[in-house]
Every structure is written in structure tokens, then in C-alpha cells.
Length: 109
Image (cartoon, rainbow, N blue to C red; front, side):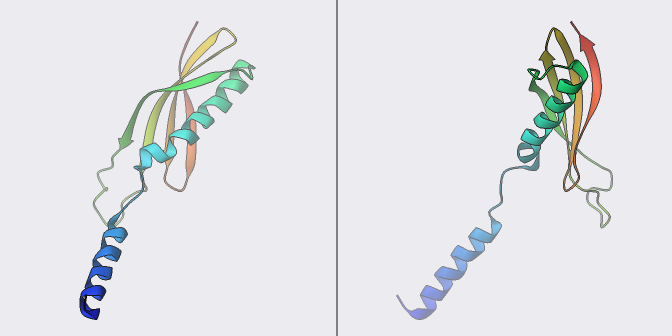
């Protein structure tokens, strides 16, 4: 293989590696969303044994998404919490670089 061919092959490998991306934002933030909802449920239920599970998830879109002033990515999760005889759903929104916020949803027994 000539030096030029080797250089072209190396450039192709580096270009392909540069295009590779990690997992989608919604998958990356899911553990933080679960932790945020669990901490809130443990506090509200006064129940350290409270558990949580993702019921649904979706990416939030903005009308400005494809403009120069696009907002950061945001993922929305509906998370169910249960423990000590109590149940509740939380809406958790995670923002790229901004952490997660849990808002109370519906309660049930």
C-alpha cells in the first residue's frame, strides 16, 4: 500500500469516527429523570422504599428548533411512583445542561 493510500484510508476512518454519536439524549437522561422522581416520591410519601418506573417518554420540540436561537434539547418522562401504600405519577422534564425537574401528576391508592 502506498503512503498516499494509507493516508486516504486513515482519513476515511477518522471521518467515520467523527460522525459516530452516542446514545440519544432521551436515553442518556432517563436515569437522572428516574432519580429525580424517586427522590421526590420518597420525600412526599415519607417512604424511603418508594420505587419508580417510566410509563412514557418523548422529546419535546420547539417551533424554534431549527433556527439560530434554538432552545436546548428537552426530554419529557411520565414516571409512576409507588411505596408505603401510596401511588403517584410525576411529569419529569430534563433539559440538556440544565438537569431535571419533577412536577406532581395524579395521585392514587
